[in-house]
Length: 540
Ligand code: DGJ
Image 1: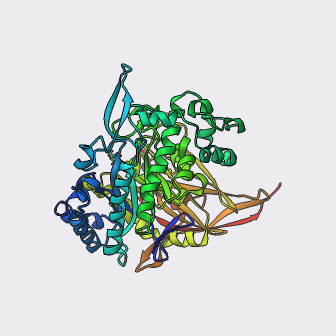
Image 2: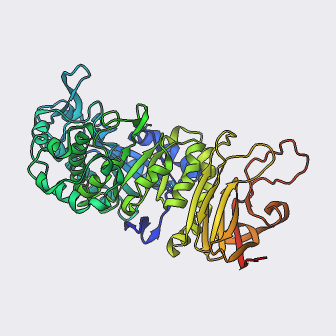
Image 3: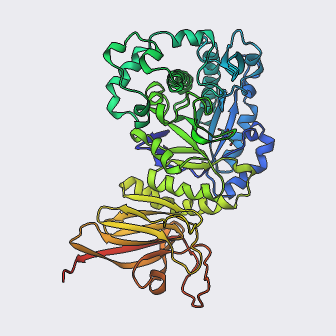
């Protein structure tokens, strides 16, 4: 059984931390192409691979399903000891409909297209399927998704190789904020549905602040008003209209799959970012990013009108990482990041997601076209500390996660403060001579006076939360796992704790600068246990 409990993923009652990576879009269309790749991925310490299953490939003719390549991929991934998250590229992929089979694409009469307004003001058809022009697209997409889910159940239920499914990919409308086809227009001019008005009124206090920045609470007299009458004329009203309908669409597809096989289903979201626009991320206005996708301002709409989804995930490439982790932890949603940057910059942030937000996983995109060393190293450490993490999850130990990017002498000093029940900790870059290095890590407060520290390039000082008390460090030990048993490697003191002043997790590369004395040491196991104590503070 695979399920989400208390924001975590469980497989057969054991918590599962995803060490994942997403394949390039076309990789999993071919078992032969993937055959040599699975082992390199598991050798690189991944335990999970995210790969696409496309509508065009599994249903090339209406009603004729072909799962040959998928079955071989599932078998080969399983043989390599990997789990899979399957990405349903159905009617929508990055706001487009390029993965619809040709029998759908070539029949716009049955599967109507979105109409958008061009910059010159003229209307034009797009290649994107309309969710507002009848039910044919939704029904066909749902039938295919349900077939996929019942097939996975049949071939995989007893193995649990497929652990989650993503329904569609980054839905929303690009190039305009709203579908301007005649049927869409008719709905936009009709009364705002009562389920939406009631939800906004009843849940107003718990709505994400980004929604309340744009709209006011609908008054009781607004019943019967159309979208612009109730919410005003703006691209954000258009976005709200699209979000309501996309959420219902995705829910319908997801539910048809859930009825066949009950494993976690989520959808992912292209993130907006003012001033940054690229082919695959960013954009400041609805339509520059996919309008109606579940970005922060309309996240509540999605959570309410797509209840089948276990959670909604951000793809974080160009945004403030922490801000988006916070958005998607809204109302205690589980956090899973299916796509993020695959460089060191991205890998360092995985520790923030896991340590601070208990993320199910934070996965680099394009893992199969990358030299694996970056993630191999990070995932080796994550794999080693997994028993400690799981223990922390089970016992609800307080934790934090953090990172330091390349040092920039012009940027304000980066110092992180975190409050644990008995101690306030201050986390800084580990102090070396010369240029400070990057860093990342997590700290688990596993008993009131004890901490597990994981990572590199940082140092920690403690003060007592109670200001009648004074804190000190009793001892620090570098630790490691030997056959799943935790062992002490070194007792750290002297230069390695700045004479008892702090717990140091040394940098990977040390920089002596121009100082001739050897004091700094390079990172060892990247795991330590520290015990602290408090005594009454002295008042002279
Ligand atoms: C986001 C999409 O969800 C992925 O499928 C892929 O197209 C990446 N962008 C490319 O950066």
